[in-house]
Length: 511
Ligand code: ARG
Ligand code: ZN
Image 1 (cartoon, rainbow, N blue to C red):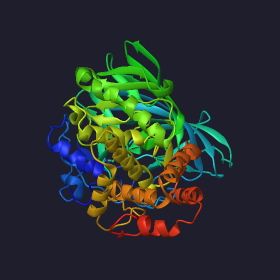
Image 2: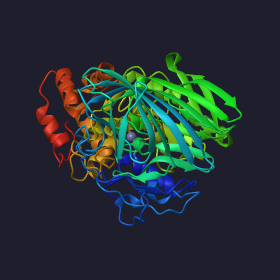
Image 3: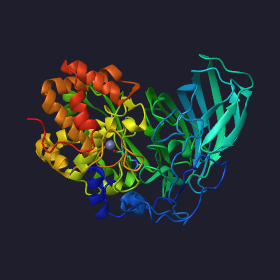
Image 4: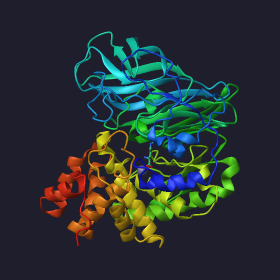
């Protein structure tokens, strides 16, 4: 409830306070980026402000009592792409176009072994390059089938090709690794990474969790298509983003193959294993729908599975046609109070949906994560400082939906948020408050003010053009302002100075 908690999270805290949490896992510290391999397991965190939130208090490990540690700030290690909030994330000189992740996960031993195949285009001539890797133990790297040198310098895996790579060259990189996954304490808010659960696992990657369980270019400026070949014990279901292409069963396990052809960011990866039932259907305009719920929850969760179609239809009218190839909900054995807009199939915690009813908290979560498919997923933030392009827009969508169903009038949500907003600029988040009030409700206030300033029709034209013209790319705040100026037909610099960049906002919305 303190400064760190955004509007969505406020609802989440109420939810979490009323429900119990499944066992998940303890967390370990993220590498500082200055040392080589270490176990990372350290001492309990009692100081982190986020520790009062459900995401950091309720998780308990079924298999370990390792304490939780606070994290060190992400420091530049010379291999990042210049993200102000996460200097070590991203990798200069490369553009990953496609990943094929072949993983075998054995829940009883908590062993994750695998290979990741990356199709990369070199954006610079290099005689070495890096991937983000803060936890996996790497055993081999090849480039175009030839063995390459590598050095693990957490949070980087530094790769030395057999010969110099030229700008524009296409290479295929294969990395073999293993990991006993354990979640990390994010520098931002709560634990991230790969979480063992009683019956399987889930991942929560935003912002820096993906590279704690596989080597990748873990920055939203580099989106890629993904194929997942996931092998799990017989009888277990593995779920990932995109379409289910194949499911085979042998005596050594079941392999589930999923593919997402649209470019997505690593932080939006979904991997779930457990006793999931897949429910397919058809949404508006023939949209393929595929949801995943735990088999024992099937009846309780059906109303949520069924709720998506009407919501998509509503947002289509305002934001433009649903921008991805498929949709569904995944209601997982995950952290109570935390939802995530995983690409094409958001993940929710079963604890937050145990009533089987669509009350305000569930409508809020469902509409927020759906709105992210336009804002954050179709159009990715170019850097983590642009996180308001995700969260403020999804919060605005959530307000629109609550208004539409007659729950909370949009003006009431907006007026309340403006009145509640403390100081701090939405455009300049810190790592600690990037998932705080000023990115969520405090930033949705900026959109309400923009709508009042330029008018309803230009406002929604702007949102539609933002998605249709930028789908599949990463964009920043300056790009949004440029498009706003174009749509409004005037220079809105004063507006954005007053509402987006300023740390103290006007007391009232423009008339
Ligand atoms: N993007 C998510 C949401 O708004 C929040 C994820 C926060 N990240 C975290 N590690 N807790 O819906
Ligand atoms: Zn969100």
